[in-house]
Length: 200
Image 1 (cartoon, rainbow, N blue to C red):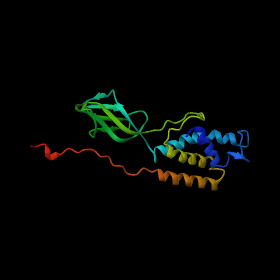
Image 2 (cartoon, one colour):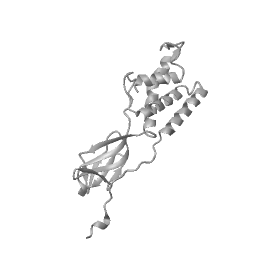
Image 3 (tube, rainbow, N blue to C red):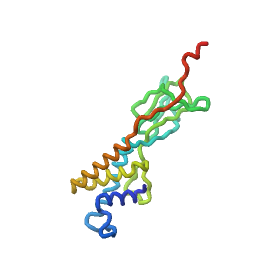
Image 4 (spheres, rainbow, N blue to C red):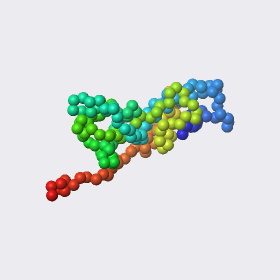
């Protein structure tokens, strides 16, 4: 969905898109004010939906560690919101889960210097938020199934002070759709070393 499509959908949800089949001009009533408020509410709604119900996964290489005593400290990517699967270590051409790390302040990870190697981090990232007023053809950094949910959030907040009945209906629909986006538990399968096969 583009910003222009979201804006039109929001205006349709609050019955401010058209009158008698013609688009409402920005000069009519408070239309320009409504449209001007959409970008800030979009940023708020996008951040809310993407950091709760429909998170964005990413993988990045960890590079340039700082040595501190017996530890190597890596900075996490700038857009890291939360670790998803933790660290992956490249061993014999394959990526394997690496558990012997510590998270420092939510922005760095530390590993023992003796475990030096090539690492990647699997994480949930923040969305790229549009700055100022986006162009109509700018795409939203949000999964397709979550985009209408963001539109309901924006629409509800646009009418919050003027129409309590419409606000309640839109916000209830936002909550209902958000709940359907909730991620269920996931399982990751990987081989486990046989502890009894080492002492022949």
